[in-house]
Image 1 (cartoon, chains in turn red, green):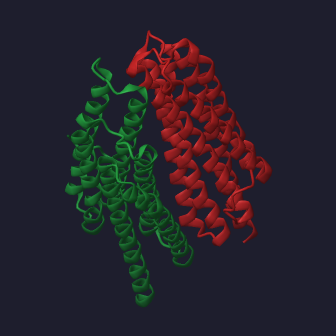
Image 2 (cartoon, helix red, strand yellow):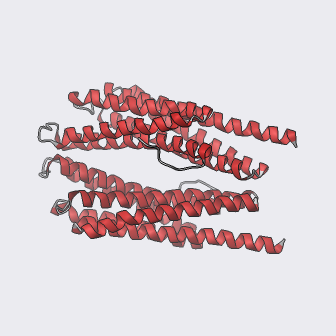
Length: 220
Length: 220
């Protein structure tokens, strides 16, 4: 029995490690997508786009493995909850990969032109950094189950929301001189980054819930 | 043993029924959100917004029930797969509720103004109908597990993509006379409807996969 338990524990650890790997993959993906966007770099955009398939496959294999563990080990309540949560986290991470892919596709669509008007480059670069920064914290949240760090991601997301409003605001005033097509691109890009951060926060909330058993929203 | 199996079967049927109920809730929600948008009706917008909380609670209760069934019944491979799939379907449906809520919030934000320029009302109304129409098919897909109908949702989604391109195209030409703020609203609305339909298709694909065991993309 001790042996079986130990194999099971190893399997759970393996799942956590795969979630960490997946987080690292999507952090790299959003990093490169932002680079492709800011520098109008087609090669990097293509790299992000083709890499998304690898992320999807990795997630698919992980999910298959998790379901197999549930079927074989028939875990009790708390372990089962952890495994179901892992499925949800992998879905969030896969979606973050999709959103990086969407950013890269906008860069590719407009190449060799630069999607962004020069005066928005710094802001979008900042938004990209905040998105990447949030996702870079996920592995530590998963590995340490540090609830303080999990709460910190909520604050990072507040920063993202602020920057997102600033981005939309920069187009809504009467000085926008780049046409409607450009405004559509920027609106969608803003949405992709915002959703990327939302999913990162969602991953962190799931860890928080696993540790504390509570959905309680932190004071911020 | 026969008795236990039968209780389990009842529980599975109950889960299917709840997924059907949830589908009906989100269909109603997107229906009303479109109405609020087209008619700039604040009362209906508020209704959709407050109703989203009910959808979230319903989904949360359903998920808790599904996990409880897995924990108690320790189902074998195919039943376990069905229950995990149910969790994913409920997540898609919950997200469809969120997206209806987003549409309603845009309508509320601009009230008493109408978000849409007069010449886009018909197109957006059509997009809203296609979205609702797709989600209205989900209960039948779940109840009958009809793979032909599941494939039909893919075609409906092609129609959605076509209309979505038309919507974006209507702003991208040089005749757009409604300013950038309006273009931002319309871009986001288009995105919300498109994603709503994507999630509906995702629900239907999950049923297709459960029945056929294959992810194979249909010919279209």
